[in-house]
Image (cartoon, rainbow, N blue to C red):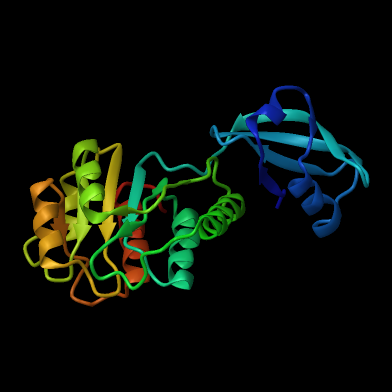
Length: 244
């Protein structure tokens, strides 16, 4: 498989490309590529650029754009995951696997039952790297957006104003995810809320209803907080024709 890297759009304005230090290190020391080898560069616009390496030296790695085409890894449905904060390793799992599935936006949420509520800038940087590396590995055409954490109240208001929104709740009995999706297959975008280890509180569910978030069940089995969003996203992409 041809190696893929996201780089600054400014680096792809001309036929000749000089790679930044991080990508150059990957090419030179990790992959041990040589002049004549091919890589794919992406500018986060949905396009991919095939580049033939011309020089792999100690000071710089450069190449020439030989082809430009639309990347094929982006779903038509723009899915935003409002995931309540989890323990660090679990949240990172959601970011990585959610990116592989096709989630377009991650919005961390500070819910009442969250185990942790502090997110440092260093932690955000680590999360951004995880998302970018997962996007490169899974052949995405864009790196999903990762926003700063917000309160549940702010998240519910934001989602309610932006369009169709769902909130997964283990006590919901009247509406399944499948039934809701069958009635909204043509939606171009969708927001999905998934709670923390302790679930959403009664007050949060009431606030969600006030902002028009539709409560749905993910089935009779209780899923872990780090599993629920990935299962729901998979079901959503399957029902909308994004998975085989």
